[in-house]
Amino acid sequence: MGDAKTILVIGTYDTKGDELAYLAERIRTQGGEVMTMDVSVLGDPPHPVDISKHEVAEAASSSIDTAIGQQDENAAMQIMARGASTLTAKLHVEGKIDAMICLGGTMGTDLALDCAKALPMGVPKYIISTVAFSPLIPADRLSADVQMILWAGGLYGLNAVCKSSLSQAAGAVLGAARAVEPPASARPVIGMTSLGSSCLSYMKLLKPALEDRGFEVAIFHATGMGGMAFETIAAQGGFTCVMDFALPELGNWLAGSVVHSGPNRLTSAGKAGIPQIVAPGCLDLIDFAGWQDIPERYSDRPFHAHNRLIKSSGLNAQERRETAKAMGERLAVATAPVHVLLPTQGIEEWDRPGEPAHDPEALAAFCDEMQKAIKPPALLSAIDCHINDRAFADTALDILDGWIADGTVNTKA
Image (cartoon, rainbow, N blue to C red; front, side, top):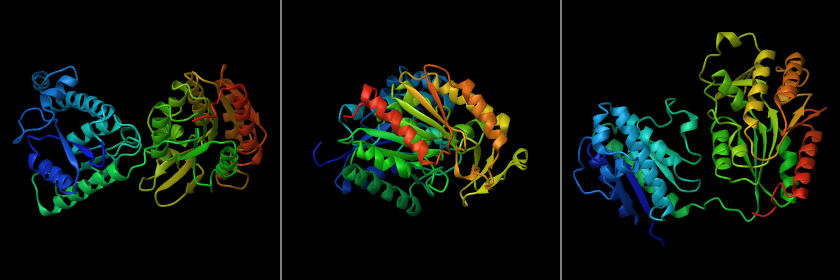
């Protein structure tokens, strides 16, 4: 495409034509090019657009008349969301766009999230939204590298306040399209999950050892968004192997915490045929947002306030058995080798003797259930150590070395 970057500008041009025109104008004045997509249903845009609402509906194997016939705004916009996301992906594959930006309220944001998810990592994707950063948006709706900007004062019509948001967004998306270095490595990539080193520290031992073996290591912070990004890249086949050693997001999902990465956690790598070495790091805790009150049913549990953003309570023996069963069910769908490591002396730093989450009876119940839940062809190795001990890291490396030797893990990018 040369130096000129083309930005796909998506929105309901019947009701937000002025705002979208201003956004496009700000992109063009900075040397960018614009392609416009109208996702409105009832009205018509005041000026011509590149991709009409009729084309969007047809891309969803539907029509505007069908959308109107739904007699329900949500149902109609679901049609437009399917069409818009299909076209967004197609335009990128055809090399016609370098980035996307969409603006809207809750309806437009709902559609924009689908469009962003249709694009791979490394393609800039921006959403200008009246509900940016809101708890209305769950982690599993967000693509791995989406950027959101709060559309302050932008509910209805242009004004000095909302122009500030729109002009910044125009500069951000064009700047990102010019500056982005898409994810590509000369070395095969191992995806790893972990938490901060005060809780899980195995990556300090594993990262240099893996790099010595010729791999690049991408470590994801398993606090909701990190796990979601990990799953997204795994689903796209972006890893040669994964070391998925931090699973609090799975326990959080099962317990109903908002600190999760969606229902597909611990499934994407297996479905994509990526070899997995897995461990239940931090699967003894349930995390809560710092602004939440701890539910009464967890009031008698061990408690750890990590910082003002996140705090944790312990899971009891029965709850831990349920997480073990969930691990087994998810790993059963894998189409490539799976080896589960079970460190029987503990699965995070705060469950060591003398620490607030130390609960040997609950840990024993979990280990017992794991022996039942992990079934062939997946393998389970119980290790008499703590997850943060060198013995754990050495065992993981031994498994990887065996897979390298027999060709299970590819050592070429």
